Length: 381
Image (cartoon, rainbow, N blue to C red; front, side, top):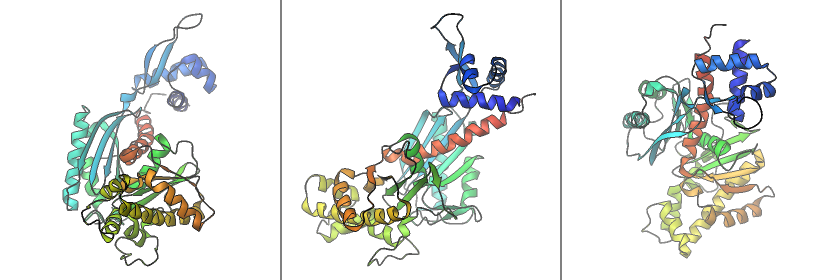
């Protein structure tokens, strides 16, 4: 019972912010002595701390308590084909260190070493060590395979699908490791901190080197029976010649390399990236604008299929291609209305290239807040 009271008090502080003992007692229904004892126990174990006293109102001032943000730390890592990002946050969710580098790795071994290097550098910048981090969340393309301890469906990272990869990551990062699909984390990030706050049913589509989708239903991430829900790069696409066992037809038709291919087909042979194509379109280049219209039509195919199955309230676009909403929005919605009466609201993500990292931190915090309480639940009852 004592542990339950402590948890009720701690949850109240986390949900509603700094409060006094009388405020907590009123809102939890616990007696003031019970709340006082819970606060004493929680403070002794470093989970709450006093932050001042009340100054307004009659009578004696009361001590104000808040959750202790230094009770634990979370590390988030975003592994992309082009960049790797890492961040450390305290238990309040405040990022205290962040590192962002190009991914030049050409093998799984090199990438595991780079992940370890960035993790150590980031926690060192935060004045910590990996042992101080209670939860580590890694976002990666593909689907984690708990049985084979590897990743499936990650063709854009060389060697990343080998068995035992998750064990290798755990060996360099330590215990408390969670590996999650990057599109799923982007959806969590937008749900917790971004444009999808308060939205119960939405999808977050990442269009860049690859294509992925995170699905949120009833405010919760939906992974499917085998963790592959949202692997929309493998949707069939008309007239595609893509090897479906390697990349997937839709990813072959609409990912960043396809945008470059469409530009080359229109004589824009100098462009080397989707970013350059969209840059030319913004400057008014008609051939680049044609590419944007074609890409929008392909994305409309995806949105129509998803809308018919999930009926999302919102479609969030992100990634190097998806963030160009100011160019894509009008032709995308025009193409969508030609093919279906189901047209959800389509917006750009608020978090930009930090969506996956934000989702990793958010997921890590949920786990860390439980773990840090359980580790200190050895209070003498």
